[in-house]
Length: 270
Ligand code: SAM
Image: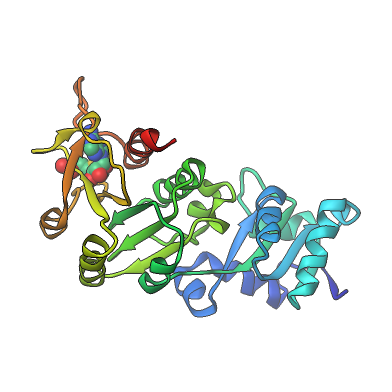
């Protein structure tokens, strides 16, 4: 099994991994860094190709690390046994993890979606906060929804902040990227042939969320943290619902609103 010991933060492989903090590098390589043994094992379990497994040398005899090593080997990856200094360079400053993994990213297309089992899809228009995006991916996994579609300029689901917030669900929730025009085009067929509905969430001229009980496929469409949904997206919606705001706050955090909506809308099906 190819194992390499690295003790210097100046090692070119360590620099290559460190560079994955940049969106540009993640885009070029199609790779991302995941932190923590629990998350790494989720990727292993779901057979996601692992290019580098990085662990503190005192972890090498743990059975879970050995399992991850075998998986890395199967995918022709490289295991890196490193010291604390190297781990600190690569992982979170306040809470450095002793096991890290560099995995391949996976994006689905709208065409794939027609073949995937799909009951509920979350659509995010121009989500900007990686913590919100990661939390929403984790919630989609938790409620048993099927996928997330990211429309237009969104933050990167494979950034370290977003993947950290998914707590491992980054590997199990299909992620799609598309433009508004592509989504609008796809939605015609979704509505006409698959009888799907687009349920949007806004604060203005919307029904109380308890007034609708979807019995068929639906997309829950959530808006940008500052601006909400665009007018062109609102024009595509079949339903428009809100969570009543009863105090002085004028809106909920995007990921909180998504979680409440998902549980409320999926409840009649369970
Ligand atoms: N100023 C924006 C607006 O007027 O839409 C607020 C955006 S809000 C922080 C971000 C997103 O969270 C919204 O686009 C919507 O999808 C969702 N959201 C937040 N609070 C909501 C509520 N009370 N009802 C429905 N959706 C809500």
